[in-house]
Image (cartoon, rainbow, N blue to C red; front, top):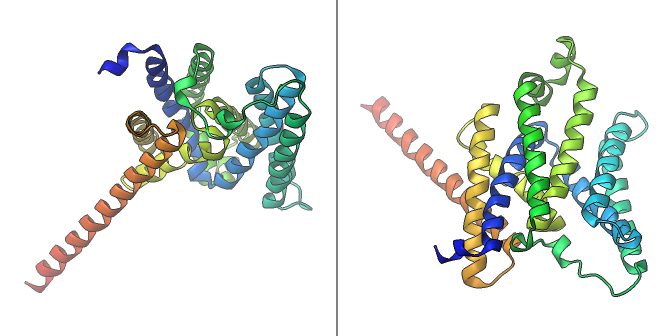
Amino acid sequence: MDLLQYTFFQHALIGSLLASIACGLVGTYIVTRRLVFISGGLTHSSFGGIGMGLYAGISPILAAAIFSVLSAFGVEWLSKRKDMREDSAIAVFWTLGMALGIMFTFLSPGFAPDLSAYLFGNILTITMGDIALLGGLAALLILFFVLYIHPIIYIAFDREFARSQGIPVQLFEYILMMFIALTIVACLRMVGIVLVISLLTIPQMTANLFSHRFQRIIWLSIGIGYLSCLGGLMISFYLNVPSGASIIFFSIIIYAICKIGKSFWLTLRQKKEVKLLQS
């Protein structure tokens, strides 16, 4: 409890909650639509925006947000063309972002910046500006999902059915891709480019072990995501290791425990059913 006296730890707790809300909403759509590979491409393409921001002397997070949103629109547009496969479109922006990020970082004037904070993250260094960004994004996502939860579910599970219901599928897909890109950028300071995709998928995979309902997965993934952040912070504090890696490691531990526990419970249930049939 002594940790709560420190401002940086208070910021970490608030940031973890807001990030869990944003990732719980967006991540459920990502996992349901099977967009994990696309999200990985957008995650790494954001590095191009960071490099450009450092070179131009503007906020790297702002530059990364703009670059990621444009990359998301580019992937969505290219993947709809008949002469371009979706995985090829993702590879184009994935490699382009990483290449531009490395080039502009080394071309930046002055001392070479420390990129480890963007690559691996450190939740203990987030500022009130980062919290405000996460808070604004979480509020927008909550409002959007509350207003359009049914169209989002239709698009996530069956786009053709959504079109038959008169839903502007393409518009929703572009908006959701924009939210995916913004969520990735907002979480960069927490877990970094290398690990942010895990925060968007592992809590949802864990929640999916217990429910197949879209709304329930959202609620469960928010709770599991926040629990992962808290556990990761404790590991980071006691072992003196990077917080971003600790958060992802703890989330994988939770998934493994739930997976093994569910498998064990199903095995016991099957044995009981066999005994009942035999008797």
